[in-house]
Amino acid sequence: MKPHILRYILAACMLATCTLSSSAKDYQAVVFGAKSDGVTLNTQSIQRAIDHIAAEGGGRLIFTVGRYLTGAIQLKSNVTLHIGKGATLVAAPSIYDMLTGSMPPALISAKGQDHVAITGKGVIEGNSQKLQNSGKTQVDKGYLRAEDVPAHPMTDAKADAVTRLMPCIIYMEQCSNVTIKNIQIQDATNDAIVLHQSKGCKLESVRFFHLHGHLPLVQDQCTGVTSKDNYVDDKSVAYTLVSSECKNESLK
Image (cartoon, rainbow, N blue to C red):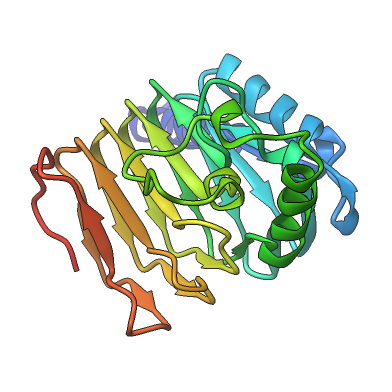
C-alpha cells in the first residue's frame, strides 16, 4: 500500500475514534427516565444520570425541549448540565424537595467539586410562588423551623423563617472551575446564584428575569470569579453582593 494512502486511512481512523469519543460524552436525560411533561418529578432520574456520568469520567447531561420538574440535585466533578433551547428545568413546588441536608436549600448545588458547568440556551425556573406557599404552610404548622436548615452565606440573620428556608437556584461551595453560561434564570425564591469559598468561577451571557428583588449573584470568600455580558431585567436590583474576603478579576 502506498504511504500516502496509509496515512489517509490512519487519519480517518483517528478522526472516527475522536468523533465516537466526543459523542460518547453526551448523555440524554430522557434515557435515564426523565420526563419532559412538567408534571413528573424527575429528581431521582436526573441525579442517577449525574452520578453515572461522573463515574464514567464526565460529560454533558442534555435536556431537550420540554419542562423537567425536579427537586434539589447535586452536580459532580466534570459534569455539565446542558439545558438546550426550549428546555426548562423547573423547581418542584414542595419545600421538602429543595432541602439538601447539610447544605443550604438550592435547586442545583455542588460541594468540593471541580470542573462543573451549567450551559445551554434553556431556562431554569424557580417556581417562587408555589415554593413560598409550601414553605409558609410548613412553618405555620410548626413542621419546619429556620434553624433546621442551613442558611446560605450572607443571609440576613434577622430574616423570617420562610425567607431563610427558600432555596437559591444555584449554590456552589468549595468548588473550582465552575462555568455558568448562556442560560436564563427566572422566578427566583432567593438569590439566584450563590458562590461560597469557590475559585475560578465564570459567568457569561446569563439572563436573569423576575428575581422578585433577590440578587442575581452572591459571593462569599471566593477568588477568580469573572462575569461578563450578563443581563438583569430589574435595574433596581444590585447585580452582585460580594463579601470582603473575595478577590475577583472582573464583574459586570
